[in-house]
Image (cartoon, rainbow, N blue to C red; front, side, top):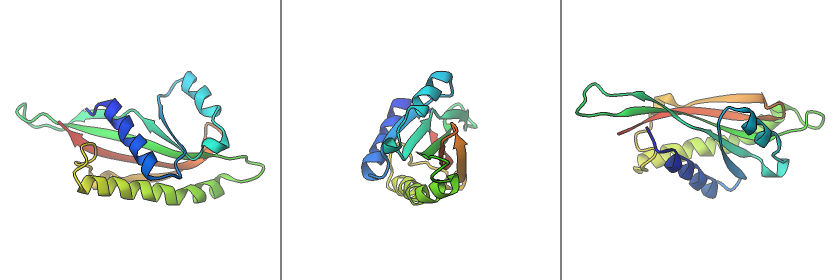
Length: 147
């Protein structure tokens, strides 16, 4: 399984290359994280939420042990339903998500240690709304192998 510090640092590097991303926030699913997310201001958005990847075995032999890392990220913006709807927010954030996907693919092609074994067929992008009630944007699921 990927070292989660290395994974977090990869996404912090993506933020530096895509200035529209205002913040990278590693998340777990618990009550404390809910408070952190709900406390974000509009000025901190769009924010890139990164979930800790899960791992599954990808080896047929003990001589070549590998794992498949299953990953999900969320690119979200906070919105005020009385001023702007979820659809408009999703539409605004879409070009940034497309840049993230393109960067993942390019990093994989250039041998990035994190994404060099990205499974291109695993890329799955979904619109998201009502995330912690006031966030909308996109989720991206993908997988890659590690030793």
